[in-house]
Image (tube, rainbow, N blue to C red; front, top):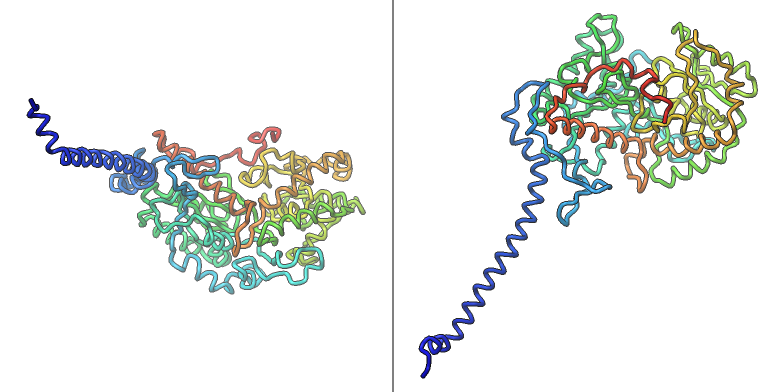
Length: 517
């Protein structure tokens, strides 16, 4: 006898098969979709944790420049050794490197360039020609076989802010979305602004642009995310010029860096002060290669140079500075006769702004003396490196305490240090001291100096290096690391204002640097 249940089932077998197939398809689709959305959600979560929540919590932040909540800043996504994002299959190499550039009113940058003839106050130079070629200045058309054609320019040493801004316009990780930016760049030409008002103007006029800038910035939504601690600016003068500590009319400079809002920002300049939120990056030299091959060619050329002088000095005495050692250096150079070459830059005796003259001397010298001048640092440091001439320093504030992102921590690997704080400590015979240097150490030092060349030049703004990092690249990496360290402090529940803008009385002493290892 036929089973009624089996009979019924068999009679509807086609429908039963279709039903089972339909249920199976639904299950399969649900599984795949959940996996897809899970992966997508993971990626979005990482990115949102990085920046999105920072913006969403702005309304809950207290409007105090010294306080910020731990919940408002999140870690950057995990990256591999090259800085590439590990999450998902789509790799964004700019995560952790995005920079947002404030679109400042033209009074803070463009107007200064357009009115370049007004920048000559207090000097005998017309600054307008130096602003050609994106701040590099006029190309040197007749390098006399001392330089490489098409790579050398008459660059003014105080135009770093213009050069940096133009290079930033070509930075590969710019973003118009400030919520994903790891740093905020403020393109204020503070040095050019100061050049307008340093001589013959009261402190109110000198500080006008600085006060206007911080007011403009503090009203922007980007400011409220970290109250300016992710902001940085670049100046073409030494940082001390922006740290006038009183309102006496006779005092030098502006008080930009002592304004409450400015204390929350970092400044990159050709020479840092003793405050922790100031960082030094190299002076602009006159060598601006457009491709790596030009750097390699220059390095090979420098290695083959015949160096007929033991040491050289390019500069002028500083009789107005009582303890300046420059006079002693010049005296010993002249006394050494054929062992030393002096390039006298005093009162226009020689055109020391012409890199042909400077490179001729430095390329033919084993050592280049680098004493402090009007301030601790000088562009000649980087000119000597370009020439493969071993720099000789007399004070740690001239280089070792300054260019921490660009020069090796082990200063003995690329330079000679002769500690002389002032004339009262001078007990050196330069000729005898340098003659005692073993030949094998000289060769090692020179090779290390030549290797530093890519790190201290600002390559052409119109092209990008294929393999090398230039001074701009290293400065950007340095400030991104600096800002990320502040985020780490906040995530750990620490007060980011502690130590951020403090003065460091020991910055220019040698105790911090030990034996250079």
